Image (cartoon, rainbow, N blue to C red; front, side):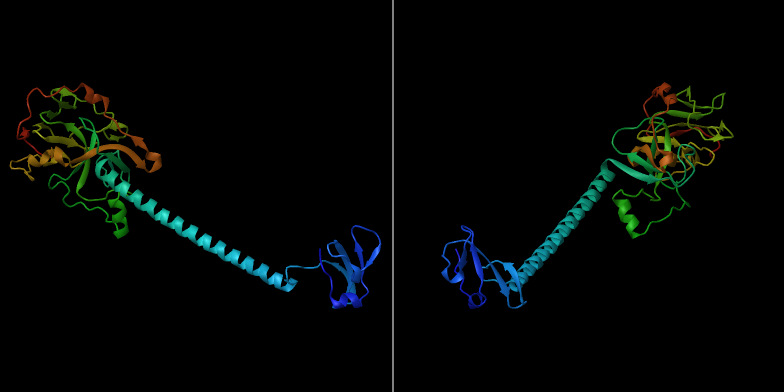
Length: 325
């Protein structure tokens, strides 16, 4: 198989043994084509060693250099691969975040929107600091809690905390609750055409002549529900409008407080009625704080209220001598 002819082999009196026989064979008389192993004195070390003849023309030092180069190239390739994977991950992350913000913005505009409760007017149903999600899909009825735009002058003198630029962006996309100072949250007591009055002989509100039991949601002082209203009133809700009240009547500046104001209307008392076009949606769930989590439904007491006996008037009818809340 190999031709072994280096001069140092001859001078070293090397003994070669063929693998096909047991007799010693002189290196000079070796037969080409036979498989041989050899033992030689290594002149570089001065001692014998067993080795193999290389036929690829590459010595050990050069082989080590080639091996190191291969490892270096492999490491460089691994680093490049890692960098590409990182860039791909960051690119996909940015796409996911942007997509989530866009989706959140769409949901906020058309499906649901979070709001922050800034006042005690709906205690103890809603507390200051509650985060409430308002659903914009679906209708509402008497007894539901709604969020609506200020119909004109209801929020004068009230201030709400303002967010920074980043907070405003997250608020716009619906990630953070809305803290705008032009929305209110109250309970619907009267729909268009309803006659809402206070109070009957038992001190309860009446709607279309039927007494309303509000113990389920009215604020309680010392365990006892407060009075539905400290002053009497009697109104008929105009077409396209609502009559609303807070659950904590003693601190709620609701429809009762504006029965002598024109607001954006053209007759005294028009400001007391909320245009249905200003309604954002109905309160659906408290999402924070977590220990306050709950959903909302229409109180059973409103199920017994009959529809109005007459069509809703174009202007609200107010039969109240003393206005106040």
